Length: 272
Image (tube, rainbow, N blue to C red):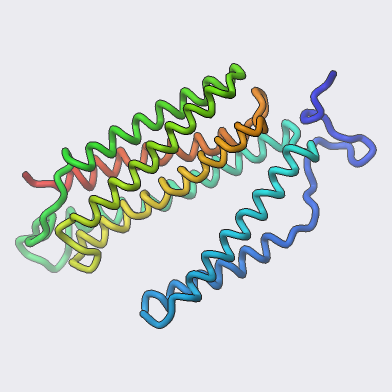
């Protein structure tokens, strides 16, 4: 019997692509992002915080609704042919490429101010009065945690390819736990840091780069947790698990970015 995911319906169209139905989510998401941006401005100026919270609620609802519809297309409508799956993978690759550019901007700004800050004589980095974090303490621990999480995720992918779905759940659970531990360790690190975000150019660069990475870890952890739930419902197939692959690519990207952060900012900016 042929795989319905790899076929199209000749009675409806003569191509393997998916022409999506009209959806309210693009417009709704745009409006939610607008509310979130306005709320962020009001929050930073200490005017109001409820608009920001409303924006978070709206954008979360849009994400859930939009992704739910995509999952329905994959699981019940059977419109995710091989061509559609390849398109989704290309979209994820392009998204990760845009994320690379985001972090490249952070690294570029950090390297610029750390190597040559114009207008200042006797310049030193980190600036005088800043006590950077010891890279061989909590940052090193978090490095080991993320590298281990990449290993457990690779284990999960291997088990999925051979159809051992119960082992996939165990490996994903371990990965999610490691991601949560990383986040808690980073929060602990921030709480006990000797400098705050507004204490100068080093702290602002440090918190922007590591903070955005921490946000990506949190998103990736949620992504993998959803994949674990989907695997428990047996929504993944040996030859059809684009959602899992997207989550794995994203997580490995987060791992690689952390290695650059550890070497450039934690280790490179530390003076014993």
